[in-house]
Every structure is written in structure tokens, then in C-alpha cells.
Length: 445
Ligand SMILES: Cc1cc2nc3c(=O)[nH]c(=O)nc-3n(C[C@H](O)[C@H](O)[C@H](O)COP(=O)(O)OP(=O)(O)OC[C@H]3O[C@@H](n4cnc5c(N)ncnc54)[C@H](O)[C@@H]3O)c2cc1C
Image (cartoon, rainbow, N blue to C red; front, side, top):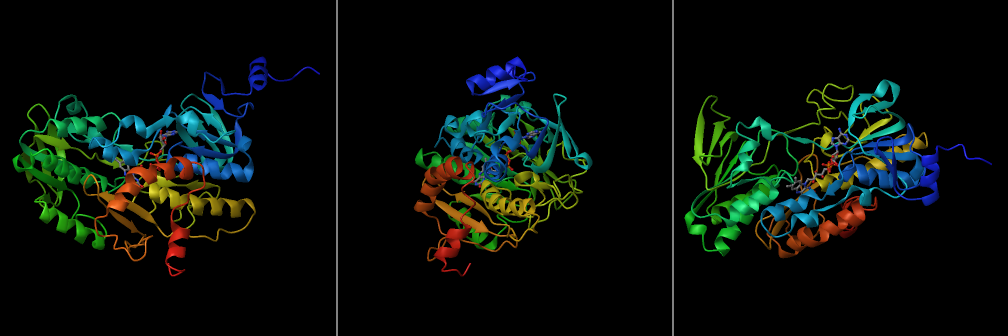
């Protein structure tokens, strides 16, 4: 019998491998035709999106799941802290998106441009309309270097870098390597950020590098942060203040970077407690943590909250208005620190929530806000901060004091966690250390 398929699709079926149709925008690993409707549609193929696609394909079948993601490459961003300090290569942080899309799941290589949750539909930037039964929003957050006067063009000058972007992370290492004498300046913006520890981790690494290379006595190391505290959880903040004092690092609270004059190696800060008061800092090295915000496509849509973030229930991760919409990761308004570790814990809860809803049952598992930040304090030590929605420590390892610098935790950060990410989280089989914590604490946590 003659096939009813378009000849191009017949060919693709015949060869059963990655193929593309509709202006090369749709790719599938299954050899099946791309569709306009999916039972589960995932927006964003970063940490949360890939993890959820891997989990939900087991529930509904790979052919019923699609991911909308524009990038050719997927990056393990947490390792950029070590890339900026010259301890890892940038190449080690990336893999092709096609290699991380769960097999059989359709990859729509586009950007979502518009939401229409009343019609269970999204529109992509290439004019395609895709409908869904269930929508998972995992769009991450946006970096806003342009909100600082003089950036991003200032990055064309030497002595300035930023671990937050693929484009600028190696510039941090260049600035550190070429440091001669003067101020080494590190910033923290006046917005929510991902991995709130990263802006100061690079300061500790820089301090360690300058000591190792005999330049520390010529460096004045300064951390100018918009926050009123060094870190949000007291137990770890106390430990970090000790380190800061011991290593002669200068911390200025409530200092917000507003301008970079890269040609003169000057940075301008406003004092958030004294409106109108500004101060210029000369620098020999500047590490910028940019202002961040929700994805533009979410802002003003029917899915956002007043701040532009995806408006979800903090326990179930279900959207507060649309029952068939769910969120995970940095794009949500979950009141916890935005990290890949949080994404892992959220993925286990969201898996359970969606599974229950698929069976017409009510969600029964609540996310406790678990998040974690391996605070790298040198080239071989880490303080492993783990905490919940209330900023209370929620630590995995009993007996050890996790607020103490540890070599074992550094090894976890540098060598173990990348494996857990690529082979656990992205495969939908790592949902954070919750079950191990309970076991190791003999069921007490
Ligand atoms: C320097 C640095 C250090 C960090 N350190 C740590 C750490 O030590 N520990 C830790 O746990 N976490 C750390 N993080 C944070 C962690 O990487 C993020 O919290 C995590 O990746 C968030 O996952 P996500 O899925 O929400 O977003 P992402 O992984 O950023 O994915 C979002 C995806 O959405 C896609 N997208 C955007 N717009 C659209 C659109 N319109 N349409 C379709 N797709 C779109 C993007 O291309 C991207 O692939 C660090 C991050 C940085 C930058």
C-alpha cells in the first residue's frame, strides 16, 4: 500500500535518525513526524527542561513529548566558576543539545515567542503554533549586562570578566592571570541571581591564585555587594565572615555597580542606603555579576507574577491559575535560591505532581525549597551550603560540620557533581540528595 507520508518524512523514517523539517526547525531522535500537538510540551532545554522531559517521557511515551529550545549547545553552568579561575576548561562545560535531548523526544529548535494558555497553545519565533495537554515552563533567567552603563561593550577591554556568560567567562581567567598590582574588584547586583554564592566564590579563588603566584601583597581584594549580608543563611555567612577576615578581603555591603569605564579601569557604585551617593573604584581586575531578570517572553504574559516570574505554587510547582501548566528552575517565583541543585530537587517533586495529575489524583508531595551552594573557598576547599525555604540548613552529611572548609566537598563540586548532572539529573534519575539525607540521618530529616 502506498504510504500517505510526505516523501521527506518517508525518507527520514527509512533512515530512522535525526532529521529536520519545516526550515530545519524540528528535530526528533525517533524518526517520527514532528507534530503540532504534544501531550507534554517543555519550554527550555536547560537543566530543568531536559530533566523533566527525561522523566515525563517515561510516563507518557517519548513520542508525546517535545522540547522547544533554540541553542545548539547545552552548558553545565556551575563549572564556569572553576573555568573563570583557570581550574577547568570551558570546553568541558558544554555538550551538543542533540546529545542531551532524551531519545525519542522531539526537539523544536526555536524560541517560544508567545503564550496562549487559554487555548493551551504556544507560538514560536518561526511562526509555528504548538498545542499541548500539559506545559512545563523551564526558561531559565536572563542576564542584563546592558543595565550597567558601559557594558557589554566594556568587555572588549582587558582586565574585566564575568563567570556568568559563556562569552566572558574566559576573560575572568585572562584578567586574573595578567594581574599586576591594584584592586581586584568583585560585584553582586541588586536583583535576584542564580547561584548567589558564585559572585564571591571567584573572589576566594582569585585570592588563592594571587597567593600561589606571589602577588597577593600587591592586591587589594574588594567584594562590593548590593546585599545587606555576605550570604543569606547565617550559619554559612558566619563561616564566610571568618574567612574574609582571615584572608584580609574587604567587603562593602549595599554597594551596587552602575557603570563601568573600562578604558580607564574604573567602576562606579551607588550606595543603596544613601540615595544619590556614588563612589568610583579603580581596578586592576573586575569581575561583574550582572543584573538578572525573568525571561522577556514571560513578562506581561498570562503566566507571570507581578515581578515577571512564572507564578507557581511553592509546594506542587503547578501554575496558580492554569492547572495544566507547571514550572521548574530559575524562571519561577519559588522563594528559594536559584540553583541546579534546586532544579534537581524540584524535578522529583514535579515528576510526582504531574504523575498524580495524569491519574486524576491530587498532588501529594511538597517541595521544601531545598537548594545547595558549594561555596568554593580555594582551589581545594568548599563549604557546602544546603538549605530550605526558611533559610534553615538542610544538610546531607551527618557528623561533619558543613560550615567548615572541606577538601572532600571540593572534590564533590569539581569532579562528582558534573557526573551527577550529565548522567543523573539530565537522565531524569537524580532528584537531589533528599532520600540519602533521610537515610543518613536515620529518618530524622
Ligand atoms: C557562574 C555560575 C555558577 C553556578 N554555580 C552553581 C552551583 O555551584 N550549583 C548549582 O546548583 N547551580 C549553580 N548555578 C546555577 C545553575 O546553573 C542554574 O540555576 C540552573 O542551570 C537553572 O536551570 P534552568 O533549567 O532553570 O535554566 P537553564 O539551565 O539556564 O536553562 C534555560 C533554557 O531555556 C532556554 N530558553 C531561554 N529562552 C527561551 C525561549 N524563549 N524559548 C525556548 N527556550 C528558551 C535557554 O536557551 C536555556 O537552554 C550556577 C550558574 C552560573 C552561571
